[in-house]
Length: 424
Image (cartoon, rainbow, N blue to C red; front, side):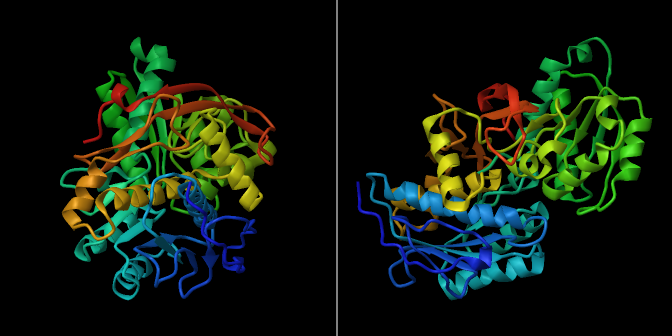
């Protein structure tokens, strides 16, 4: 085991994170919002990361920063010799113009060969275009639109979290398995999603996947609240007024929290089963709702703190809590995966490898992650540049083992990638 780098003790008030800085890879303030790892002079690989650090999406950026810290800690414990890495984190402020400008700054001013992160799918699409023009590899860690892995995929784009198509393929299989009446008559589905690329992709992917698995369905309601909508009352009422067998909701983060809190004041959750198959089971949602989380909601997320129950996932969840004083949202494991992917690629190909060698290495990537159940290892699909992972869907039930959440998911149904139609 190699010795861990010395820790440089500096304040992380920019991110409002209180971290234990004992025997972990160095963290220090730089011109970027946050710099983690080797100095500019020592670094063999430089990575520029873009996350929102304030507002409704701010927790994702803060959790991603801790996830990156954990990746450095994990790498320092391994026997393999990884190149010295420097990771710079900037606040995207959820603005496309700022995000694309920061990509150019990372490449031209900091010598970054890798870009990572981005929460918003529309911003990720624009970042991918700029990254390709700058010949920088964009490692997506926290956006879900399948548009980036459709058709002719950018040779410089790779995603390290499951996309909306994979989530909806698992959702369709779950609906087929759990709503057996869909085999006898047409299943009535109501859909509500955010009015931008992510929401549209989710619905298109759900419809395609339901058809692929042979579920007969009718879309009886389609609603499109704007991003960061403060009042969902009209949308909730519209859902209640329409006879339906299943409500599928694809809001995320603070928007989903606000929706559930407002829906609790109505009869919505008695009206029909309610599901959110991509982000609803995120710990951020469970913790923010606390006692307001209803029982029996069908939810999934890109990483669960209580599944799988493996030593690796328990370490990740516990260590995150030790460093930050809270349990991780799925964004943390996404960023963790992104940094491990870059480190492993640079180790195999070499920090000075050609773009083609880096691309080939990423396309053949296999990476054991906290979200992987026993016997499974995440792997990259060479055609789509989309990571392949097991997707688990559960049901909310009382559980106070990870406070402040009062509910966690149980009654799991898991879907391995080889059991689902591969993303196109």
